[in-house]
Amino acid sequence: MRQPSARRTRTGYLFCLPGLVFLALFLAYPLLYNVWTSVHDVDLGQLLGGAERFNGLDNYRSVTDDPAFWHSVRLSLVFTLASLLLQFTIGFALALLFARPFPLNGLLRSLLLVAWLLPPVVSGTLFRWMLDAESGAYNALLEPFGLSHDWLTDPSTSMAGVVFANVWVGVPFNMLLLLVGLHTIDPVLHEAAEIDGASAWQRFRHITLPLMRPVSVTVLLLGLLYTFKVFDLVFVMTGGGPVDATRVLSLYVYEVFFTFFRFGRGAAAGLLLLVVPLLVGVWYVRRLRREEEPAGGAV
Image 1 (spheres, one colour):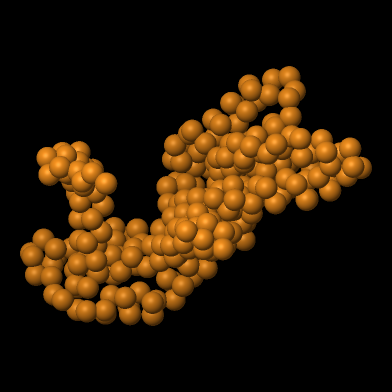
Image 2 (spheres, helix red, strand yellow):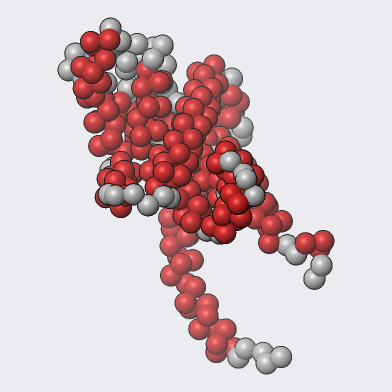
C-alpha cells in the first residue's frame, strides 16, 4: 500500500488547524477554566483582586449539601421527562398525519415549524402573555367553562405552564425527524400486511413502531440534551418562581453565579449540570458503535 508523503500529511494537518483552533478557543479553554474555577474559592472581590484560593473539592461538597440544589435537580427531571413525553407523543401523531397526502399538507407543516424557528426568548414572552391571569388568550377561552386560572403565579400550576410552552417549541422538531423516519419505511410492507388482513393498529404496532425505533431513540436523546439545559424559556416566563416552583438546575447555576457572585460554587454546579447529558451522550455513542459492528463480531 502506498504511504502518504510527508507533504500531504502536513497539508492535511493544515486543513485541520482552523477546526482545532476553534475547538481550543471556544470549547476546551472555557471548559478547562470552569474546572479551574470550580476548585478555587472565587467571589467577586477575589476575582477582581486576583486572590483566588485553591480549596479542592469544597465547592462540590457545598453544592451537593445545599437542599436547593437537589430541589432544582428534581424540578429539572420533572420538566425534562414531562416535556419529552408530550413532545414525542404529539410529534409522532403529527408525523403520522403528515405522512399521508391531503390538501394543504405542505402549508400546514411549514406553519408548524414556525414554533421551532422562533427564539426561546420570543416564545417565552409569547406564552407569558397568553397565560396571563387577566389578559391572557388562554384564560379568555377557558373562562366560559369556569377553568380560567392564574397559571404562572400559582406554584401548583407554574411548572405545567412552562412545560406547555416547551412542548409547543419542541413538537415541530420531533415531528420533522419522525416524519423523515416514516418516509424510509417501505410501503410494500404495509400493503402486504393489509392484504394478509392486518388491521391499522396491527400494522402500526408490528411494522411502524419496530422500524421507527432507531429514529425514536435519536429524537428522544436530542430532546433530552436540549431540554435538560433549557434556561431562557423558563427564565423569561417565571424567573424560577413562584417560590422556586420552576427553578430548574440551569436557573440555580445562574443565580449562584450572577446573583450571589459565588463563582467557584457556580462553576462546580455548572459541571454537575453536565453530568446527565454527558452520561446520555456516552451511552448513545457506545450504542451507535455496537450497531455499526458486523453481526456476530465477524471481521
